[in-house]
Image 1 (cartoon, rainbow, N blue to C red):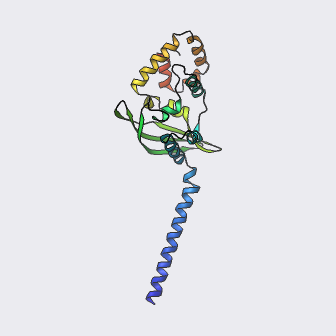
Image 2: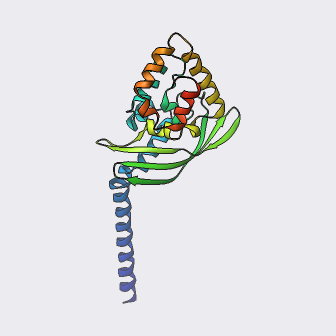
Image 3: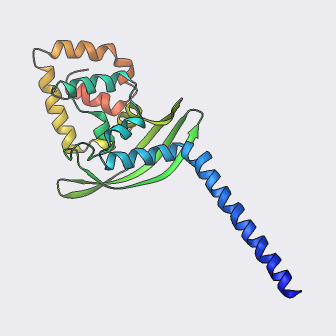
Amino acid sequence: MAKRESGRVLGILVFLLLLAGIGVGAWYFLVYTKSPQYALNQFFAAAKANDTQKVEQYLDKSGAIVGMLAAAAAMGQAGGIDPVRAIYPGYGDASLGQTQKVTIESVTVEGDRAKAKVVMEVAVDGKTETIKPTYVLVKTEDGWKVQVQDTVFGSFNQFVTPRLRRTLERQLRGVANSPMGAMAKQQLQEIRAEIEKYPEFAQLLKQAGLL
């Protein structure tokens, strides 16, 4: 009788463990893999591995500022920086630093947008600096993606070190004083309302004489 009871208890325990395993698996595939935190972790892993194809899969690069900077970078113009490199130092090359560690502290979701508070340890010029940017994600038909423009310019002073800021200001001032200056100022004026949404970036452009 005792053996029968112990066997029944063991059977119930095994059944409960199986249910728990199924529940965890279902949560992972049906909930977690469709969450903004999962998308952000996938982006970080892909950027660390320099997996361009996978990085692009988790990015939303809409926005006039990002488009202008990316075009300038592609043409090798002064002040042109691929903004994706800025939000993960070390992606592509280490000219903006090398990310050593990433910790997602919290994620808040409001409708089709999410904000993730992140702590990053970045090696710059032989020293490790800690930055605390906020990553913005948007929900699309293809799932959650990192919104590059809101992320990089919303946390501009976190991603851009004082040394890099001085370099950028010098380069942008050179553009402002060059024969291309008038055209650059006109293009920036056309998207001024969008630029003003990001005060730290707008201040840099004003100091460089472009806005």
